[in-house]
Length: 362
Figure 1 (cartoon, rainbow, N blue to C red):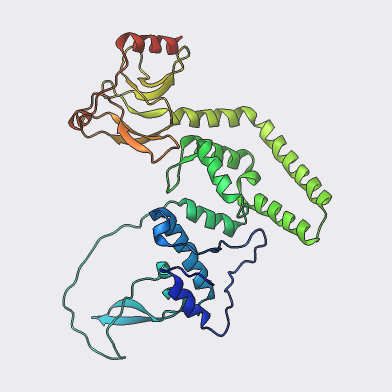
Figure 2: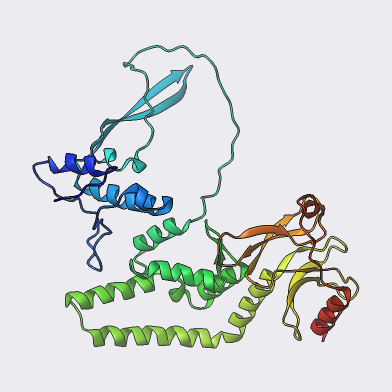
């Protein structure tokens, strides 16, 4: 006896009434693994909220691949206002098709009034806005994976791991993705001294060679030999510029350690790790003239935000521990905002702080 999900079974019954169940295909044909698809029946009360959301997403996506095409119509009205051209665009879904089964991709209908060539309309109001061209939005992890696919970088199985490595090595942070100073220094140095390794072309070329081996169009030994020669040329170029490359990357690392400006003397505040205790804290680079310092969480990656706390003027940072969401905080443990929230200030004892700075000075 067939089982059906109370929430999704009716949709499956509708699909089964079709004369033919033929799944749609994407633009690219991949053979590394099949698409995710449901393999059993689940009920909403048997799963927690997050599990049900994932299950429903997979099932509805699977249904959509078997459903009829969806059709929509778009409309544009061009208006002449005393010689100034204006236009309005609208669209609406005519036939739901697969959108009925996967509504997450459906956009809200924006219908325009019926109009014919030569019709006159009444100008009710004019709203004028001055705007500047905005820079493109940063890549999210999902958008970056799409871009990597377009450029032929990695495979479905490796793209997530490549992005994870960028985070683990401190080259990027946050989502949408933001490069760190270290990441920028590495990228710019490679572009300067070994451009080929820093562009998508080489990696895409190697991926194409792998596909050619699988298709029998070339031999493994030929690809290995060519790859070795390519990498040997790159390593030679990097070795010849080893000192310049190292200095530029070290400069990027130093920049990442600057969290902001010292409220007391205006000098840069830097993340410091004591040689003796191995504890990290923020200290003023104008030490010993300025002994201003702040404690830091001892775990997680510290990201400078370039922002000042509105309550005390100290820099704000983001702490990314890898467990749960990152949190943003003012580095000043005695900040009035923390007292308002009832947070107990965590300060380094004066004697210990002096020892920390002495250790660094040594």
